[in-house]
Image (cartoon, rainbow, N blue to C red):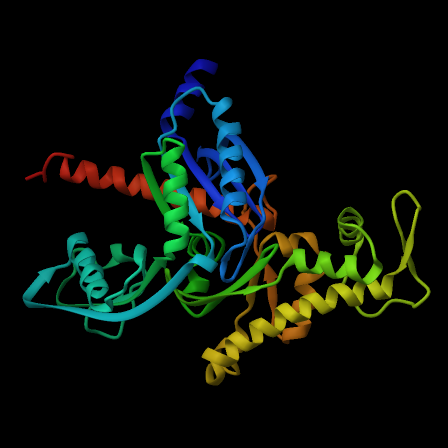
Length: 402
């Protein structure tokens, strides 16, 4: 049985590289029972990180990826030649387009028609960067009804196919560095996935996405906010700031090292109101003590800067809608930042005067916000593999079935 299971793992596993703003994780996974996932290897490495403008050190990133991939490969009995790479929002630009295909007479919509709609819309965008994915906010067939799943329009007779479409373009810097690196590591097939889209589709319920939904991903060095509608991202923005910048503030405020700042953050809780001025935090070894009020104020200041970026985003793009439809829908929060700071979501909710909720994978052990991106990417990669297998069967690989 053990040998058979190893064979299944080799044949059905997909390789994922999850690139976060301060670390990379390489792992192998496959679909388990009851919407669970099974992992056969996982390794995480830190690197110098990224800002909203790109890598701080491409060489540091390369070393981290090589170390993570090598560690997993050493313990895997098989060949890994295909890989799915999560692209952080700092290296993604989103373009949306309303597009229409007209037919001379009524015809039943097919998957090929939907794909032709996407291709035609992309051609009209005249974009210079490489498009790595497209998705729909919704489709219509010339009526007022919105279809949030392409399968709902298949087989429906119509003379008009319309779509509100989202296209995801990858920055040349990320594309060039990662492609060259993974080719050197003997990966022949490289697939790029927009991380925010993967998280939005996996973490946010379909019904929530049939109106405007919001996802705030608090990372280590960068964070991002995106507006989601249907299966597409309407707009997203990345800004510098996250749990790492709060750690630096703690180091500067108290004159301490990084490890001590981490210890303080692990024990902090910024939910609720104020604390007595005389209340002190003491290190695990009893070496030093600091004011809890000062600790909380420092952490809250970092979170407030993050909230200001979110407010500026909505004010910049959605000033009129922000006080109406946008204001009543909650902001879903995930990422290692919200997982590292107890009470972060509550503070953000008060600061923005908006309902927030922390969203995590619905899985045992992995039900933590720092696992959101890797589980979402695995889910999207496995869906792509299944879709590709279905297309190959449809066309019988060598030609279309008649």
